[in-house]
Image 1: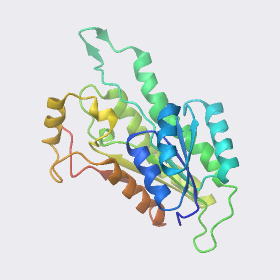
Image 2 (image 1 turned 120 degrees about the vertical axis):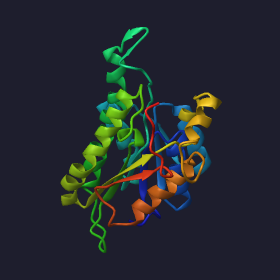
Image 3 (image 1 turned 60 degrees about the vertical axis):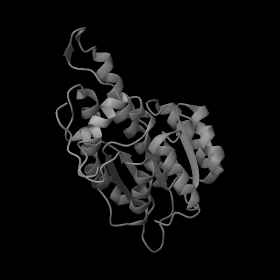
Length: 254
């Protein structure tokens, strides 16, 4: 898909991988709208790229519908949708405080998995109405964000791993269903990325995690996620697949 002049929506675009993707797509000529529950963060990035920022709770159907309607009025229906919004909660099923509250598990699933699906389904409904590109018959591309935790979840990551595993599992059936409309679905599964989410981890723990990354022997940069997203958008044969972005990392149990 050609990126120049292409309307794009990015959830979680106020920071981290979403912000890096918003910046790169804007540099390549896309008309970017950032969706984020933190409107101030979204506005900050939007002001840097002459884009637009809309407050949006991806777990709420009405909130996403309103956000997409506003984005549609600005630039037309989005041909590019990148799902970067997500949360991390570390908690063992049973610890010294007792059993994990069901609400803790539910909240992670609600944001990471159901929120991703919510934006994907509504963005796809908009894309389905877009005239197909003459040369590719393509109407749109949806890129979701999973994690290597979908495959090698660590102790304390039951909720997070389940949420990201769900994103991995829905990639192929979603791509098969939306193929009828000329819409592709891809997923990126990052490893350890230097984002605000990971920066909350103590320096000693971060250093220990980096020791497990074979090469490059460092944290991934948010810009590297963005570059992969751009390649996925521009390569029409990439569909229904999950791509790990992890430097050959395989997470240990703890």
